[in-house]
Length: 508
Image (cartoon, rainbow, N blue to C red; front, side, top):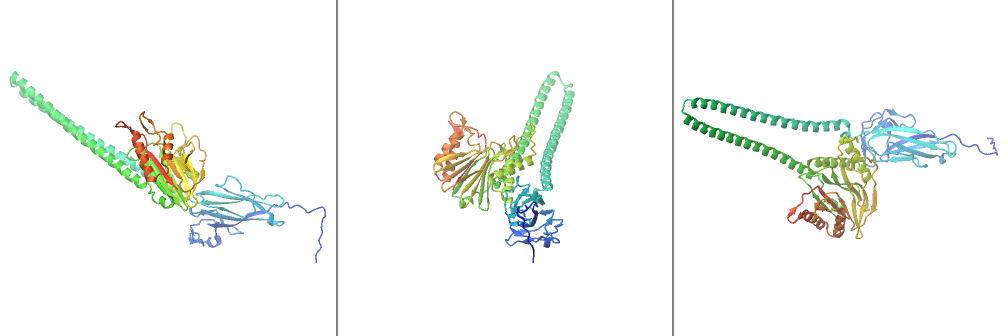
């Protein structure tokens, strides 16, 4: 019932490229029926894997596969899988693909016959999924593109940050204006009192002069001397009262400033984490934390995200109140990046933190600009495999394994605007029971002391840590504290602490 013609000179090559199409968009590995959400886009529901999704925004549905157009997702619906196909009539099983997510990937994927692409934990922003298909003869289809958006959480929106920063600035300005006005009022009162006292003294002197004219020269001289003595006495008493009043004012101001700094210390101490939960996953941990002033520019921080334990020791620019402001900002930003965005890879954490610090401080890299920022040593440990991931900004990591100490050097650039803005280097090391990790700032090694008044130096600290690494962690803490205290005290004379000191030790 048919006639077949065969041309012996060979089959005709397939020169028609495939038709690349997107067939489906999944959330958290589960299929979503977008056509059912077209008229109920604000509906929230739970997927089969227990994850709740909702708050969708899109303009409409595509004609063939009913996919949402101009899709906008909430910040926590950021795990997407794209299903696609290259339609080819000749040899459909030999169609191959390349894809990329513009805004996340820098290059196209390797050529593959896989018909899906998954992306998880996408940060907020606008993305374009691009797809190409190739037939068996090597002919590529035109690029297929699909653009979507992940909205930022409310605490990262421009209007919230504007309100937050404006409130802080207005509060500080209001306090400054209030204190300035109070001091001016007190100054005016003092000037008025001095003027009244001076006027009264002058009036009394005039009366005394009139009376002295009526008495003899001898009595005049005696009376004049007596009046002079009385006048000097009044002036001395007035000056004493004025000095006493000024002393009380200064003491009151000093008491207010001291109370404010002590309150800031309580706030900072409450923000520092309790490290006792780390001992449930690892063997033991200690932190030697010695602020130079009441409040500290150093801080340590810890968080657990699923199977990863993230720990860090940071050294902010300056110390005292300015350093404390930077440390509080650093801990807040780390919480946003690690806990809320589920980022546990150290080099990515440092890169995101550097971006947020530059944005928060408005740094532009101009000459003469204040180079505020922080140095940091940050590690991430898998609780099950004991695999260590580490990255550092100026501050190193010291690792003791098998009785030997290894220094993992940090990248020579801070968490701030800098002439080098490269990616941070991530180091991966397999740990085992008994290994000890030390995260340190520069306060310990830069402390002056000893018989010659020199710095403690990194070499001496490494030798000390290697010597005590096998001891219990609480004993290591006591040895480190006693060593630096003795270093600062020579012949009953104590060197001033030059910087905040922080050393963290973690035993696997």
